[in-house]
Amino acid sequence: MVARKRVLSSGLIPTLQQQFLLIVLVLAVVTSAIGVAYSRNQVRSLFSELETLRHAGDELAVEWGRLQLEEATFATHGLIEKKARTRLNMVLPAHESVEYVRP
Image (tube, rainbow, N blue to C red; front, side):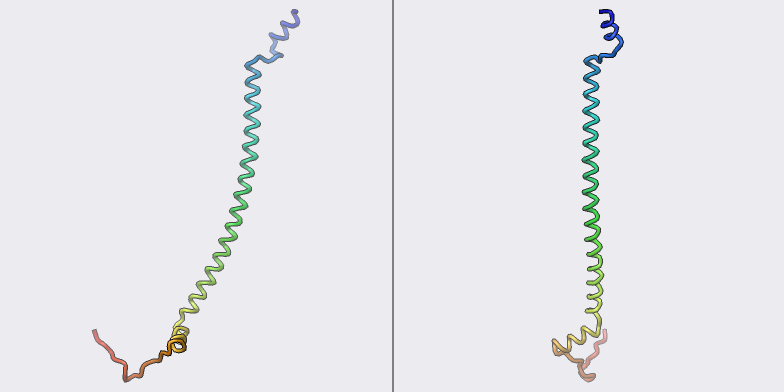
């Protein structure tokens, strides 16, 4: 009986409060580990989406450059004049029929 008292008083058997604290700490560690795993998964997913969007942005930038070049080509004076002559049958007026208006 004396040996049993010594074991209880020496702290080898945890008290109810110590057991409760141990359970709470274990649950906190497990919850933290799950949170870390979830966060890493989210980071990987978001990074993959970011790379996909960057690639799409690069493709759009190339297409935008192509469209600007096409617009510049269509806006040249010679091309506009040629289309006016062929599609609209427009011609330059004779020098005598031009009237100048002064302000």
